Amino acid sequence: MSIRITHTLDDLVSDFHTIARRAPRDMAAVVRRTVRAGERAEVKIAKAKAGPHGENYHKRISSEMTGAREGEWGPDGGGTPVGAGFRHGGGNTDSEASAKVVAPKFYRDAHKLPDKWFWPA
Image (cartoon, rainbow, N blue to C red; front, side, top):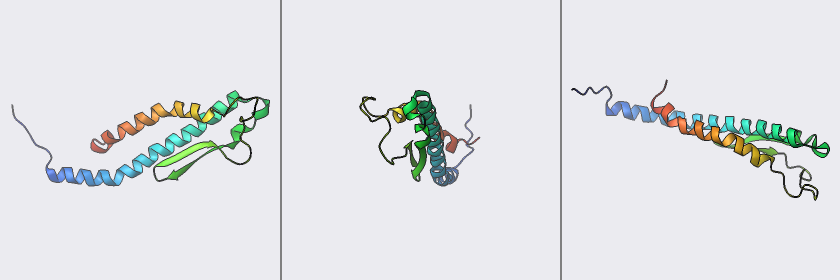
């Protein structure tokens, strides 16, 4: 049995420098994709749940990146919130439901990033 070394510490240092440049961009891309997916999921949920009173509610849903690696989606805040009236019995839960839809994929995508950085395809 023999051991063969194919990389040196200099190679590891080089890899870490490359990771430091790639990581912020890759993390931002995962967040951006998740925010867009969250918006699409919430629009789909809002359309499915809307009655006559909220048939245009889905048009108020938007998304945006609020920082380099953070974003948000949900209804645009102008005016009276839809679904907050006495007949509804509480607040709107479409955003919460959409987050439950996209959270597992966000976790998987974020969890894969270190492997992508250390072992590029």
